[in-house]
Structure formats: C-alpha cells, structure tokens
Image 1 (cartoon, rainbow, N blue to C red):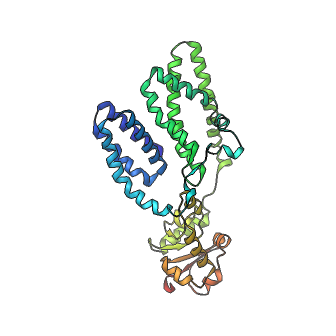
Image 2 (cartoon, rainbow, N blue to C red):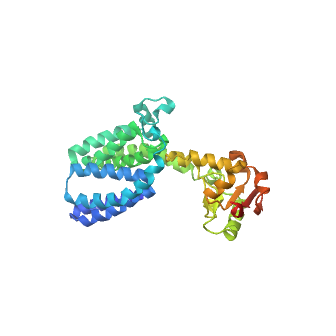
Image 3 (tube, rainbow, N blue to C red):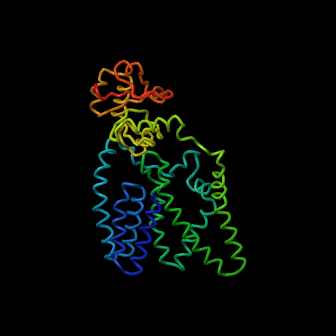
Length: 346
C-alpha cells in the first residue's frame, strides 16, 4: 500500500510540474498527510524526496504540498510519539552497513551479493543521466540520499524494517537503469545484445525467487484451523461487537482476525518493532492469566469482558484454567479453548 500511495503522489508532482498547476501539489499534500497512519516509512520517503526536490527546484507550488501534508500529519505523530517515547535510545540507532554484519560482510560485498550487476549499472546509469538527462540525475538524488541514510541508520528497532525504505531506492534505481538501457540499445545491434543480457541478469534471480512461491503445496501455511473459524462464528453471535477479550498475543489470533473483537495485548513482535513500550501491560496480562490477587481490579481496569484460555494462553502466559473455572461462568468450551464471561465480577 505504501508504494502505491507514493507512486500516486509522485505522479501528481510530475503532473503539477508539467502543467505548472498548484492543484496537483495540493492533492498530493492531502494524500501525503494521511500516509503516516498507514505506513510511516513511506511518509519518511515522501519527506526526504519532496525536501530534496524542493531544494533543487524552489518553486512556490511546493508549499501547496508541504502545508496540507504537515497539518494532517502532525496530529498523527502527536498520537504516535507518546507511545514510542518510553522505548529508549535504541529505537533509532547508528549502524553502518545495515545488515551486512549478519554474515560479517563488508558493505560493498554485501550489496554485490544482494543486487548483483545492479551495483555496476546504477552508478554507470547515474553518470550517463548527468551527461544526457540532467533532470533524471537530480530526481535520483533524494533516493540516493535514502540509500545512504538506510545504510548508516536503523530507523526502527527491527533492523530489517529499513528494507521498507530501500525498496523505494531500488525502484528509482530501476527507472534510472532502464533509461540507460534504452539509450544504449538505440546505438546498434551489439549494444542491444548487451542490454538484453544485462536485463536477464538483473531480473533472473528475482524471477526464480518469485516463481518458487507459485508452488502452493510447498509454501502454504495455515492461518486458522476449522475449530478457530467455527469458534469465531460463535463469538460473533454471542458477544457484543465492543467486547474486550484477554487472549494470547499470537499475530493471527482468530478473535481479532475472524471475530473482529478487541484484545488487551496485541502481537508483541509488532509492538516491539514499532517501539511501543508494552512491558507494563504485558506484566498485567500475566498477572490476570495466573490469577494474581490483583486480577479482579485489573479486569476492571482494562474493561475486559471475556477471558480465553487455550493452549496458547497456557504455553505463553501460564494461564490458570482452574482460577477462572472456579470464579466465572463459561460462555463457550470448544475443542480445547474455553471462554469465560468475567463481566459480572469485574
């Protein structure tokens, strides 16, 4: 979704510049201002690219982009920042080489291994653009800045999330190299052969990898069991839409994905990668599952209506089924998962 939104905004910039019409920049600004809620990395790219392009071409129509984008984005960051402020200094960190350290590669060899021939074609194409297509050369500058920044800094706790920035750099690099290939292929037949071979070499590995995923039997993964689907259907029928559940935190929990109900603690892997300090809430969840003396107060504090106890809750949070079965009525008992109604004694 991030790339499709960014491409739409890039197109509006291009049309606005071609027609010298501020309205395209105004529309792009409104779209960009809504992006942080959907994809923060895309917004970072838009900020970097628009900032660089503005410095290169300081036309007043850019302000029709910056002002609405800023007005719409600021409230979203005002909401996000307090959630990540407790994470600590490691949320963003200095890490030259990005993930080259995983296999102890030096920076250059790391990129040769990852993008192959493109490590040669990108600089050649950029130099060629300086000579023959100066506008394209300058358009590529902000994407080169993104590449350098993403190789020096980690912008979220999980280092692999930098790939969300580098995808934009590689997309722009592909356009740059494609421009060079077209230019070279127009010179003669043997140049066409060189371009054809280069095109095969830079796309073959990706094509092979993408093709491997077409083997459904090899790559299929089960998201939910039949029991999960049946249980979700019953929960939709028996509980209000606003009900809050205490559950395990697996990323594909049926009560969220299939029944559409709220839970107290989401998938900790995603909370961590977003820099959200979930520690205090996790501690409270553990207390409630084991039947701590504070459990009734915590159930009330988090407005919990139902508690699910199944294999996941027992394995990850040591959930005490005996505690809840001795105090609360069972709403459902379905293939190893029990749902307790705790509304009456919160």
